[in-house]
Image 1 (spheres, rainbow, N blue to C red):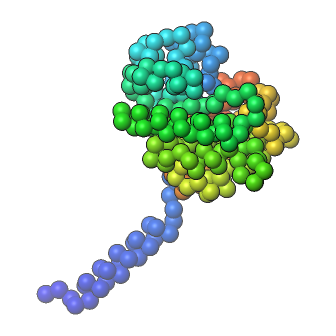
Image 2 (image 1 turned 90 degrees about the vertical axis):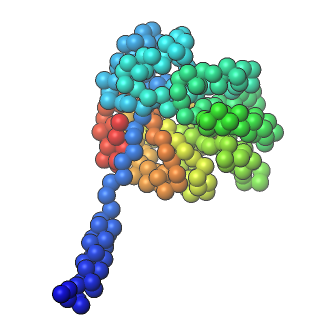
Image 3 (image 1 turned 120 degrees about the vertical axis):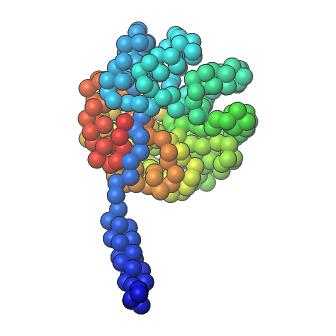
Length: 288
């Protein structure tokens, strides 16, 4: 015969176990990938050797920035041979305009989940009119890629954050007028900080809109408040040694829906600086 106290005791025990397991958070792990632009000096002269370098660093996920003189099929074959999954592809704005069917075909061959535009061409200061022209294209390209089972996004580069007279920016126009179900944003943390913005506050301002990070750090003393999207290699340092508050940025990124994390090393010696960057980011639960 079962004791009348058995059920209450079991319930209390279960509640205690749940309390213990939920009160002590465990480290959340996300896959850390590499934006291949980091190793362009290795990939351009010898793609097979460059891909082997990527593998030697421990990465299994990559984002492309061109195929370095090879066909998409050849590029995919080399990636496969080195155990590298091509998650996303950066495609020039002009090519998206002139050859969207070709872009879609290439993206399918590479097997990517999304396509990114990293730079909107502009000869004058990037303003609302230029932002709205880009928005129209982004929404259309997002719809076309979505219909093929892929996503579309654009990458922050600094020029879009220049303040307007009303206190907003062209970036605000782009986020507010692109369709969230068709267009996401990839935050390059370096360019956000160089423009004088706080990445954490920007993530909080637009929850759910940032799906990817480009992770790179800025040296202490580097100039900020710039809106050009350019910086000397010497302003880039190994992740964790610069001015960015990476624990806060990564934590907010997770809360805000960031799914993809890519190191983009633009130092003068990426093969030397990427390993310590990985070691640091592993302490935040980001691992290749």
